[in-house]
Length: 428
Image 1: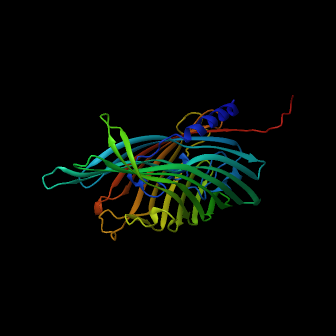
Image 2 (image 1 turned 30 degrees about the vertical axis):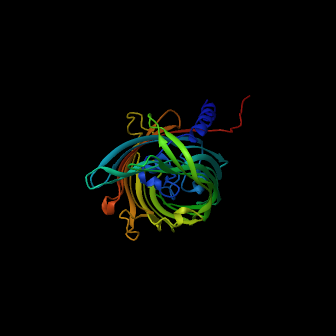
């Protein structure tokens, strides 16, 4: 039965990935949009750790080497609900968005290998901003509207194996694809026609990641886990066109294009540098676990794109520190369901690598930082399946230097279905 469910959900979610809008952050205006953390709900509930963590029935999107430790075929499906409060020095605004965060399938190969495939969002664009210039009497002399939508998805496959006892190695290959549209409309007082700049781009790229995990088992059943991954430098190729034209608005507020002023071709790349992640964890299987993780990446580079010369923002080095873990009172408790529930928590401190100048001085750049605290529950179902729920409270950015601060609340939910496939029948 579980196999039929997996096939149906895979088909439905693959189609819906292409159409969903999963972001409402003003910071998605920059570059390829706001990048997603490619973590499961379980990992996000523990602050995002995962490079050293592995489990016999849970997916791991951070380290492909963890796939080698799976003992059951596992299907994962995740949802994200984001409540966002955007604040400036004087104003605030709320928004909510809901999206699919991943769909994945992992299958063990014997006792020393495994593979997984999946589809996830890589980045998302979804913003609507306006900027008004006022006259001395308070009337509007000029208004500019900024809007964008779209994003990038990634289709990936991983393979992990155990070459020697306690050591796991893995490799991941992914293909990123998507479309992004950005537009700027400018309307001046006493001018009949507005002008609009519209940019339509298609983005494609591939990437390779290598991972390793090492486990040291002690006599008291406590284990020390070490993990590391390296994602090699890769390019996202950007192609498309931009248009500049005049327009008017009809009585319903809809755009009525008039004359095309200019059309040009877009052809460039986002060069994404090597990303390195290291982690260490200590725990007792299906009892407790605590870990810490560090991630580092050099600045993005743009070739042949407007972002290369845009003085409103630039890229710097990014890094992240995550701490988290779980506690499971008694996995086989008969007297209490809540003793079979897994309790998770974590912290995350991140420098996003985005630097923005909100003052217009073209020299006063502020690094956008992100902080989150998370909690989660693993609610067991029949057999080996689990419903995982997670909460995350966080803050991104600042109101200093005329910038925007985002306070967000993320609710994540996933269904993890585990079963044993490919067993040879003993009785026909």
